[in-house]
Image 1: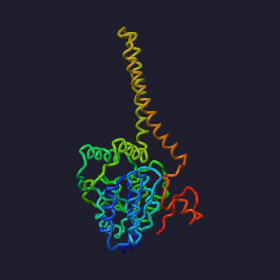
Image 2: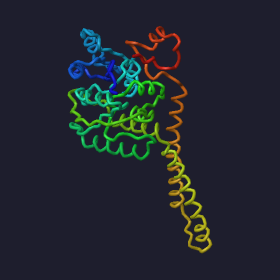
Image 3: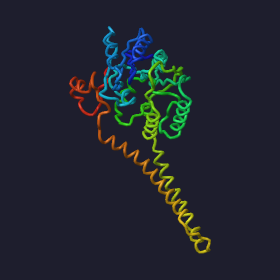
Image 4: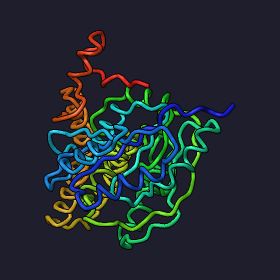
Length: 331
């Protein structure tokens, strides 16, 4: 039996996208003509007037379908998506970037697969024009690495552009970890998943907010959140070095008494630097996980809403649901 769409929520984070925001809203409106929908745009601390422009676009919509959530500062792409999910009310929710590289016109194709009973419909990129060779190569390396290390299956060549059933959104709402990798979290919660291919567009304006440093940080979040392999590699490396040292010890004794032992510091320095470097690398891997534990135990909120439907407002409407839980997800 085909699912009935009560409300489709489109969640889009934006950071300094003043030039693109009007076109994005226009294309979403055209692509979803005839459907019951809402657009939840999360202003991730923009400083170029994007937030004010979004408020104007929301006020100009006679049906009141555009809702803007203003964060108090830039909390990052994944946190902005989380804020949008927390405020989405539809029984089907689409995550899409607000830079128009992911075309809103592809949303109906995702919706058709959801109607057929698929809970998570992932948009898989068929073509990626306008991106550098380094960006394409690094993306391939990332998915190859995650495919080997991650403890959850990830769709290759797919970003955060996807459609989620309300059940999936409610399940994600229970996961309040600070270092968020929504692609992996979506796979972790399970549910029926299928991919729909689409052609990605070149950026219509502005500049990408994903610098090399942020891409590396994002990759580390993905690996550390869904794999213990780095810790296991550190353990195996330590055991291998210890075994090598034990294996060479008899040779050292034989060489000393055979008179072929050459006193000197080069070999000693090499051994010290090698072992010291491995120890520091291992401590760094352990420190990465310890730092994440520290972030979790502080229990800070994932984001702070400056203007829009805040957690405090939701608590007033639902006093029985006050606490560390996210705002309730309403149909």
